Image (tube, rainbow, N blue to C red; front, side, top):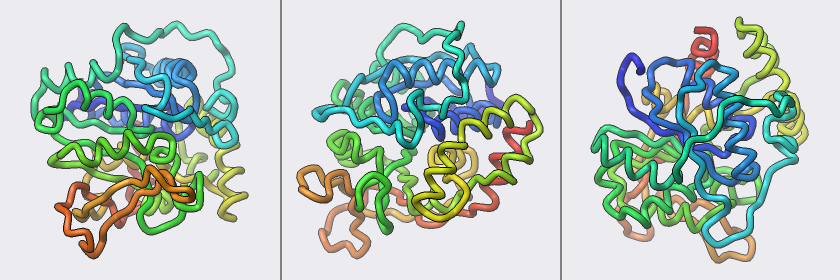
Length: 312
């Protein structure tokens, strides 16, 4: 049980930055993690599930339930990101296939609905993967938006360029139909943590060197090696962005980001812009705002939070 009792479910497609998000959530000791749900995304559903179990063992939290979910997007073919995360999704940092922790019984969308009904108004979902599991949960339980305290999702980019196509961020590109269902579901508090802010939260080798636990430091250094190399190739900076950990950071300290409410949608039928998240900054469409868009971030404060939590 956490110190605060802030109940969360973390939904992941465990690649390199999802793993860092899990480490932050567990090590912060400020979140009551009811379970971690997995989905196809960066890697296959099975690989994401295995990776999640490995990370929980690494961080000494094997009692946290892991529940597998959707094995593919709602209507599209899977699009893995091995060039960014390596063949295993963790940059080859945990090569030993032996892991004693196994996934729990159940189906992630059902688990989300069950826990939301068990803790009405008290559960926050932190989504760092394609939104397939949440879309399926909404199909099963249309009243889900009234049961949840908040949904925080890492996905999309509203002012900058994409990281999978010129316009689209990976999570919304991988399953734009799911993202659209979530955006239009009527959540009272739906927070988008996009590339606009995550690209400002950079982890470099100097910061990794500040980690005091040798096991975690070695893991983070090894797993991010391929990630840093890829980021340097694309952006000319020797570091990697803490995309998914920032979504956890927002749950831990909402003051880290500046949010404003806008109407947001996702392109699903474009030749060039599939998966692009579109934010109506000037209210040209006249639609009711549906999303709290993170526009600013205190990157330095977040990096300190991240390092201090992993050093706790």
